[in-house]
Image: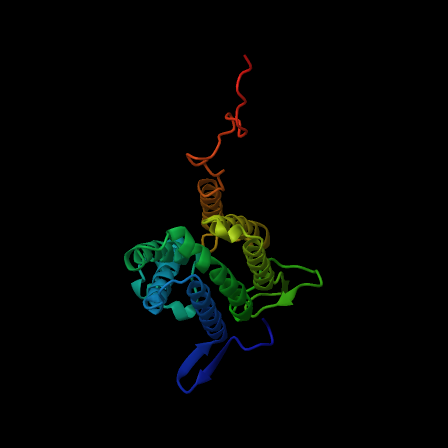
Length: 272
């Protein structure tokens, strides 16, 4: 955002403002996730280690996806692959890598906790952290805006001419609304059906992310925009599959309960 410093110096060190914003969002999400898991009786002894591995996996995956989708720039310059301080992280690459590592560690460290129950507790915290991260992160980075616009909502961003669609703020509002929806579903009792909260979050977030990338950013030649749109659709499809698998099913009658075809009233003796 133009007029707000995107970085500052402490001696020879340079710190990026958006990095501090993302760190704050990650810490808030961590505390919120601990609280939700603790309420569900999950042992938190290894949760700090899980968080650390997820962050490492997300960083490696996000950077790797960015390098892969901008290979013409990084080809022949291997040192550039590691220059994350110059920017360049692909969100879906981070999500994919963190998902693989997270599934493996949860199965290893919490083998008795149903995976869907663990994810239902964790996902709303991730969505809340993502909402806060969009507002405190990309909003204060270089070239953080979307399309050029003459609308009153336009904001000037450093590194981009003219006023731009404030995509980070829009996405923060979208993710915040999704978080409220998930909390509402839990309040209405849907949280007792394992997998529903996770499936709803995956479906809506994937579709909205695809919509934003296509209509608000639309940089098909930059940072793998087409790949982001496809990944969003894949995530939404996986969310729909999760909802189908975990959909509420009618309770099967017990052996001592009457079936719909069996009258529940005692039979009367036949008259002679």
